[in-house]
Figure 1: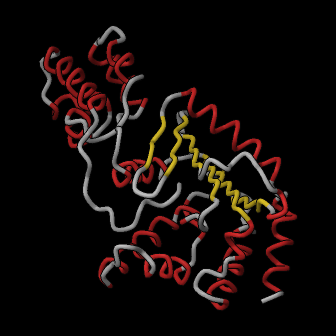
Figure 2: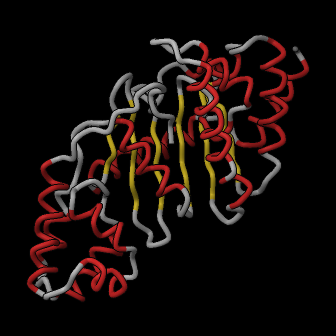
Length: 278
């Protein structure tokens, strides 16, 4: 996933579709005569999760919806409402939702044309990004962001069976964010990470010109239930995608980018040459 806009801390209001799903779910639960505490074990989720979904503050996982349909005998109403669930605004919340899904994902696919993806950043690289944020962050905020990023990066080591694919524009690495010393450290870090069989990095060469990712960064992830989600990010907004047609478009673009980028082996060779030149 691309990283959220640093310094955006306010939770947005839930969208009407999330609120609507929550109200429909609550109505069926009450019709069944169940409290949240009685109902939660039946769908194998915590009561707090049920409460968040009914309040429209948490995206309902597909497996939750399927279990709810069965337990509440909802005759397809919950599945129908689920198709229209979304949140119109609020990058901070969507990033947190993506982070939750990342922890369970069996596949993560990221294209970046602005900066090195958060999962691949070194502390020096990330600190430079936080130092340059506008509005300016306090030292406390910067340290909190660094701690959150470090915790998120544990995914690479803790999920050896998850496929991590990254496609990054070559110039993003050549920019020397943080200076030469930070760039040498970054290149060493990338070369070490890509020794893992489940971490694949491809560079999109500067000589390519036009390519399939000109519309901006892409993140796709696949859950253990083989459900796909997408995420796209702008300056002060993010879009979390669940619509199969939208996700299909991102799949097509990502597949094209894979074919346009250097192979993982050639990308490693380029990184090694870049490291040797510093």
